[in-house]
View 1: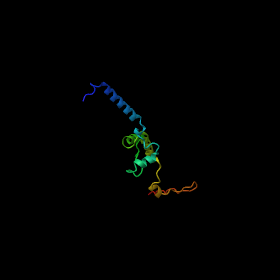
View 2: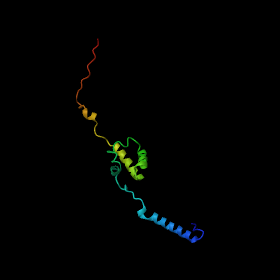
View 3: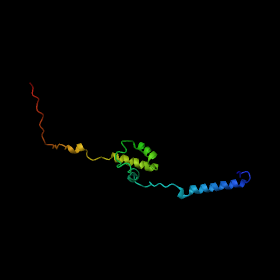
View 4: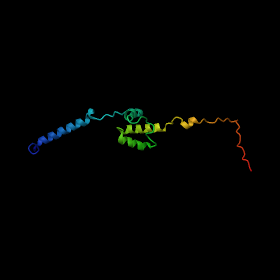
Length: 128
């Protein structure tokens, strides 16, 4: 069905309706995507999105550079760049946090030395 040749005004009306519809679709606030992660702290982002598979955040950065981790999270897991950066920084800070004393550190008490304590020198080796 060829309407363009018979009624040129119909083409102009269809184009106008299309442009009006596109304008309302673009400017409608309900049509815009909403960022559900906006304003959440990084620990909450981890709890909401990562804790289903990872029990703890410690060890996930594994000594990677923050930028490398950011690009990985942005591409695969985060909904936007700001949440990817927040997660990368959080994971790095958790890995950089000092851990508790190690088992070997707890088992071996440090020797108590006072400034005035005397220690015996080693015994001389007998000469034959």
